Length: 124
Image (cartoon, rainbow, N blue to C red):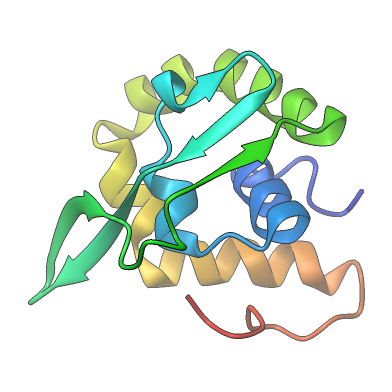
């Protein structure tokens, strides 16, 4: 995990690994989905015909509540502190963070420090 902390997608990595969330679910989270010590998973980002769209999760089981664990809370604090700067620098945060190439490069950099595989297990 230490290899990923400096990456701008570190908070996303935490949610992917800690909760087993799908990539689209992580990208679909809003600040309003964090309620005290609960994370409400209600929507996801999908690429349909080359266009990024936000929609509901695919199944009834996908709509769920998760406990906000300490490591996830720490990751959210980091994300809150960097979000404005990222948006200012990138312009369109969502487009930059959801491109397959961008996410794959960040994942590869983080995993290279761990000696793990380059691809996200199970794909998202």
